[in-house]
Image: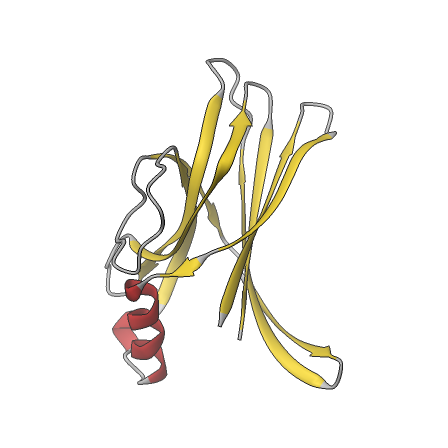
Length: 153
């Protein structure tokens, strides 16, 4: 299982300002959630996915339960799963996408971390499924940021 985050930052006219692809770490909480789902734990079923971003710089660790310094986030209401044929081998890819809307004013946000927070049907909030740190992406006023996370099995 691997995860890759694609970050796209666009100006108010839609022009691409910055784009990154970074591999992430699946946290212990994320692995535990998957194991519970595999074992049929109904209370583990996710019902909300949020991609959160922050300004923390500490390296991602297996035990991370939250971003170091969260500042914003957006929900994905329709994650998708697809089966892909890659050179005779089938892989399953789950994709979570969220768009952070324009900030109308304020200073530039130098974002350096991201993760998927999952809320389960049992009401458990904020399971940090994965986390990644990266070189600063400077989100300024009037910029839209789209984050797309691909998890491949």
